[in-house]
Length: 106
Image (cartoon, rainbow, N blue to C red):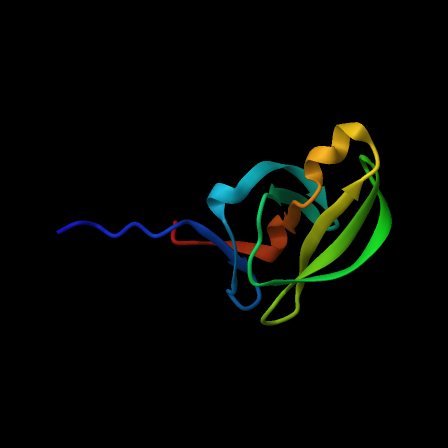
């Protein structure tokens, strides 16, 4: 009998809503508001809030807070625009704070 292999996921720590796939991690070397954070190429089951300019450790960015679509917990943010050329790779990607997500199917 073949063994079923489920994708490794990250879920909201509060309600366990699936928010991203492990395979979508771009980097684990980011800093969020509350400690370590991961940069993801995609996120799902999230609500993207209004855009605002924020001065982050790597310069000025236009970002939008990202919340869980089920419980509305703020999980991180989405990079909408980077003003410095070296930071353009972040555009369209998501920061999810390690303290706000949990592993599923590991």
